[in-house]
Every structure is written in structure tokens, then in C-alpha cells.
Image 1 (cartoon, one colour):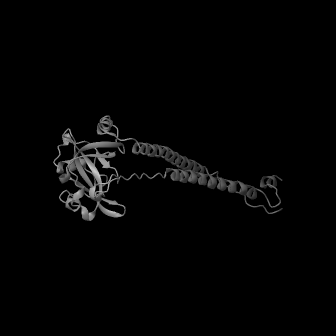
Image 2 (cartoon, rainbow, N blue to C red):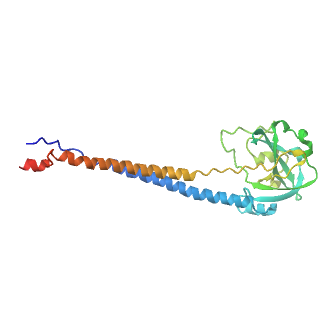
Length: 266
């Protein structure tokens, strides 16, 4: 009698592995689909910002109506006129074009007695004090065109330093505190900022048009990664099952090709 290899007894079908694989596959597909949804959302948001920044400027009253209806006003173009309260400017620590310095936020007094804070632009660190850029301290009525910006409800992160009110250095744009330091009644404060455009200021400072619109859109790469992992998982499981299936005949057949069940019945 020919020698027969031992049958592969006790090897059950790997149900647990298959079930776990299906669960992981479902999670990976869900993550990929979520990133696709985020991709469409981000593309829509970027298109909306692009449309807003290139729209014709509208009066401040139109932006205020949008805000009053509970909608955001970020990046909407606006034109406003008034008198700059240069002695009440606030300084927001920032970097621009590789240099550290400050964005100059100056209250603009409107004809109706209210005020709106305007980010007039960037000044280098050594030009923080208004006396170093006296030409830019414009007197009289001015008209400013720029982008409306939503205020922050609170400090964006615990990693952000607290504002140094004594030194007049802000690390986050606390509109209410800026107004309080500038002696502006909260009831007469326009509830959002305006970033001035690139129109040059006398003396070249501040440098306007410093609004940074940088919204990363990596959702497509993330989606491809999750879907790729799901496909890889399917391939691994398929190879594992294929190898298991291919090995079964060797274990269940003798060297002469006769099955062990046939030999025992003889």
C-alpha cells in the first residue's frame, strides 16, 4: 500500500477571520466614502470663497443684513467710509512675507456714530509704534474696500497665548476686548472685522491685502488611501483562502492520486 499523507483534520473554515475582515472592509469603505463627501463639501466651500472674493464690493449695510440673518460674512467684499481712530489701533502678532510683525487693527468711525475694526495691513516688528509710520496715520474721511471677516467666539486653542493687553499685543482677535480697550461702546460696534485690500497707504505702511485664504484640500488623497487599504485587504483575504483551498487536495489525496477515503474502503 502506498504511503498516504495525513488528512488535514481539525482545520475549520476561518469564519472569525472572514467576519473580522468584512467588518474592517466595511469600516475602510465608510472612511473612504466620508472623505469623498468631505471632498465635495470642500470644493463647494472653495468655490463659494472664490466667488465672494471676486464679487463687486457692496455697502456695509448689505453685509450687516447678511450677518443679522444668521449667515457668515467671511470673505465678502465690502466698501465702507469713515474716519480712522488712529490713536486706538490694536496690534495683532503675525507673520507676512517671511517677516514677523503685526497686523494693525484700527477702529473706523462711521457717520452714524458706530465703529468697525479694520485690519489695515502688516507692519514689521520695529514699526509697531505709530510714530514710526506717521504718514500712514491718515486723517479725515477715508473709503476702504476689503473683505468682511467673521469674529472669533473664543480663543481658538489652549496653545494660543493669552492676549497681552498691557503691551497692546493680540495673539487672537478678541473683538470685544479690542473695542473695550479702544473705548468703543459694545452697542455701537459692528460685530465683524474688515480686512483692507491692497490699496497702498501713504508712506507704504501698513501693507494691505494680507488676508490669507489657505484651506487645504487633501480629501481625495485620503479617500484613495482608505479605498486602497480596503482593496488590499480583499486581496490578502482572497490569497489566504485560495492557498487554503489549493492545499486541501494534497492533504486529502495519496501520492498516487487516490483519496484516503477510497483506500480505507478497500
